[in-house]
Image (cartoon, rainbow, N blue to C red; front, top):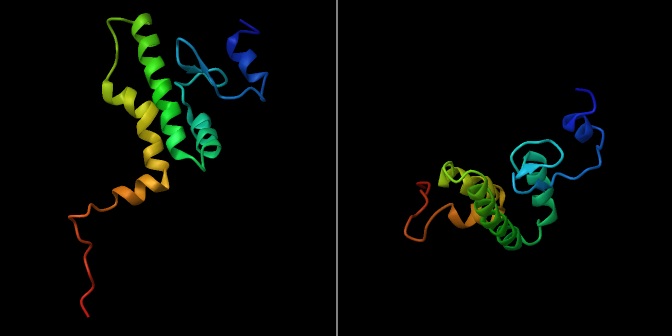
Length: 114
């Protein structure tokens, strides 16, 4: 079929990578949202305020859980996968998180012997 949804998406290169609700697929590329391009854009947009990024994504997670549960009540998916899809990835890409979780106060980093 010529002119289907995939061709329509490709025809609009300026269309942002936003979610289509209630499916939570990317409006532009069709991958589960947030897709790779959306993650890059979100990290850039919230670069100065990572807490705001987490709050925004937590809100999206809440909405997605409700939407997807209503669409497929018998197939809710893995809780860990859904959490990682929305909230796990920015933690791995946020400097504040990496610095804060590198070592706990009880752990000591190895020291060089002199």
